[in-house]
Length: 494
Image 1: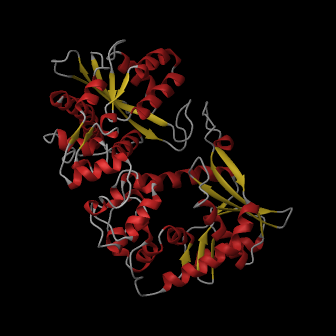
Image 2: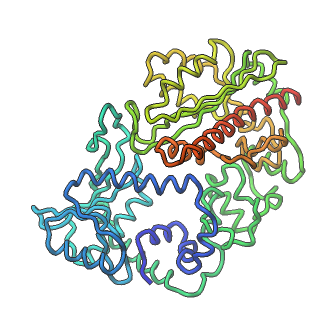
């Protein structure tokens, strides 16, 4: 048994899940990675390759085998060399270091951990580094500096990519030094735990986390917990004391939670809808919200790509690149919607062409209806900054935006099948069951984002690209038509 730093971090999140990865990989890897998870991995690799340009004389150690370990020891012994991905193995622990740079003044090595994030995550990044430094100490490597190298959120691209300004370097030597002894003890505890051939008894620690915080083997580790459980109560993950009290009382089913503790209004409404099979509709509140609307109505949705490394002028890391929109225009209360769409697949910034197209369809009057307005409003503000000639246009849109999702997030309409969510993919099957995303080639935003990037990068044949462009249009169009259909259904109800 050799414990890598990756498995150590996984252990810190959920020990039993880490054990499953090592001893029962068929279960751990049974669920395919989501497009979002794949994107995180690809982004990490991309950022690391770019960051290496800060160390132009670096030598790459390839592989994780014995040869890689021996090559590492040879280069470290010779000194004077920057090494990418050196491998260190000792006492049952293994770590690959992103960058090890020789420090001639202090006759030792500076370590750099590259993270494809704008911020430092102390619960992950610092422990990741502490694991490496603890192991390097055991291997006899003199560490003279410990650094976290991450993306600089303040950098805005203007012309050629400035690699130096793109990154920030946080020197964390003192912080890590204070952590070493504790982390080393934890590493040994983790190694002993994960070396056992016997599956750990009982549930995993994720039972005390909301649904979004569950590990990949949660269902296997906790077979007694139903598919729809107290973990799905609205914002229960932020109410740790409430969730702990429920779990410690062996309350897992939604109906068992009723009356146990004091819940928030939204949580209690969710419980009532489930227990009593009751639909809560506040018709007067919905009518009051809809009275604010002015025709024509514009149902708008953007598709975007969040690039870690800014691709175009005016962008910072992870700024969303709007490459597509769909629009349904309803001129009068009884009119059918007119559908418009736009997608840009050239290699330059899509925003100028997108803004020009959108301006040709959205007039100076009328409400612009979206689902979760913070996202669309932020994109509009950003495009107004990058394209001053459209600033007034986008400001005008933002002044007229109406968030249809708020009808559900404010709980003016509560149905048991929403399961505490206000996602359009939960609402649509209830209010407009004849519409569905299930049969689409592209079903969600992460897939759409990745498909666009690969089209732009020329990763598909002409026929494949054409098929995916059409699929993107169908998906985005359904987003806006779904909003229109939900709106119409609510109008009929009230």
